[in-house]
Image (cartoon, rainbow, N blue to C red; front, side, top):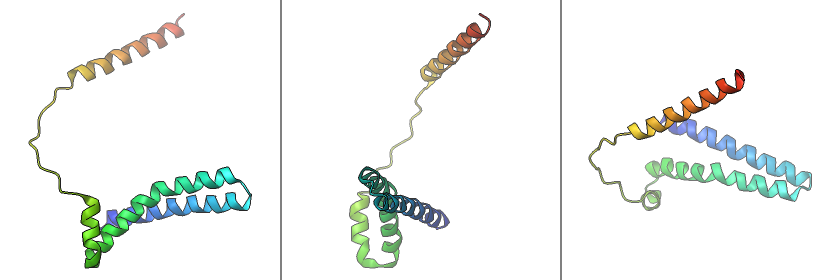
Length: 109
């Protein structure tokens, strides 16, 4: 529950800052800034709405069907498979070695 409350506080603050920026842009008669901050306000506002719905659906039963409909069906459990990642690690190592060699060549040139 602490994680949900912390997420609620952070998302509310982010949404509030974006709306505050939109209000400042509206006061300065800056249309582009206004629409930009309104658009940015939707990014934390949508998860905020869903989190509030999830928290309130546990308390109020009439919100539970809406929460279940938005959450979708529960995922099917699948067995865990090991996927070898040696080729990805080899590629990363090759890039790191190449970057180090380029840096050393440019330093000692």
